[in-house]
Length: 556
Image 1 (cartoon, rainbow, N blue to C red):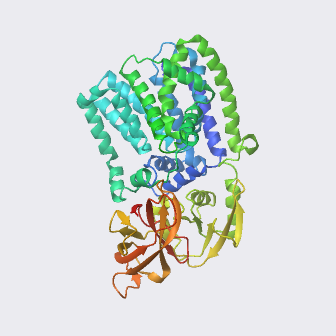
Image 2: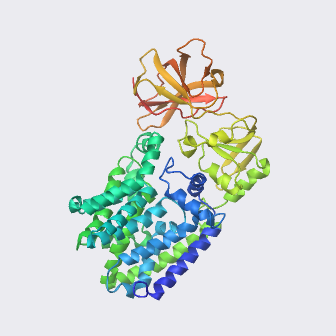
Image 3: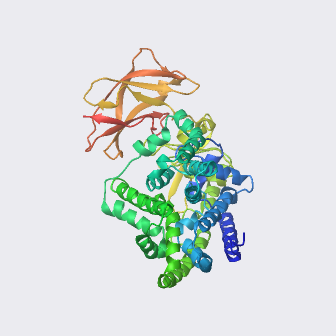
């Protein structure tokens, strides 16, 4: 133990662990954490946006603590676990001589620090990426059943963390194509697929909703160099803070000395190039390249141990980075120290403001899968629901049973579309929202509109549309209005149009429970440029119309 982990390493790791625990306790949740906390209230093998690892971490954490620490407890362990495994990956005779440099290097990476206590999908992704590289290094030294099992399980852990993990596995494989002839490598792949099969089954049972959304349904924007590619380059800098010149220079100077070094280089350059190419198509988010922090940390630390001059100014910048990030971490709790109002500021305040007006009444937030779980968390478990309309996006509230929990009840309805309300509140950024009380709330957002063709010709006078009613009750047609949303080539909603429609069978007055009703419909082409797609949308009881179909391509 002493040989692998010097006392100073254990002391510094312990201090960092305690710091993350304290930070977790005093820092309010960010919106994504609240959303994943909502995941964890009903454990499953998958969720609308991500695989289930983040929900499992939160669920297990909740058995130890309540509140924010009950969301982040295990993330604190994964944070120090990532650092521990990184240390074990370094095989350099001088590594114990520069322990302070090692911690300064890691502490200079902003997101690596943040994911040391926040519970987000990238938290387990970083840990399992590190563990995967550790398992792969062992596998290179000796291919055996034991090393194969270890490698296979770490790959499964990676994939259960975030879908980006497939890039980690792919680029490591590409660095060593000899693995294709290794029976133990294939054994590892088979084991990982078996371990991952429950998630494959979940995807199948949910009509591959996650894959469809991420690959085909997400709106995009017209390309601009500043917003897309330059923004991506800035993301590469942000991930390493003030040390970015040193880290990228170390990468540039790195020469592969074996298969493991090749894996580090392929993984780093592969991720960078993949998302660079992606930046010419859509905006990239800062955390999408977070996994390169792991191989880059190993490359940069090896470089500083061999370069005394670089080591000196790296140390100085590392100390400055430590000070700035430490102040920033305090600012997450104490707002005056933070340069902007952030998501960790004032959530309890706006939640308490609403609750003081409505008590324990269920709340329906229109178009906010973020505020809905945040309110539920800080209100002590008050029932909430996010009612998604066609101006918004699908999310976990689209596919779970949360809608049924507010049906037929008196609820508080909060929406930006209200001009007047029974109550109002401001969020932490000063945006005003209004709310009204509704008796006997009814929504039918799970109604599914299915066209009889993938290509809709607006020139056709009559077309066939089927509406499936998955509910246990018949729904009167008089409560519903069918509309259509017209989208441009970037799948941005530009116009909502009316639909002329009638049931194909005369005398039809309702959508029968768990049955499909067929309609004839016609559309009027909207007055808009760049018309490429449409979505069918149903408004029930006068509510803003929902998202009730897939995206269909249009032929004018």
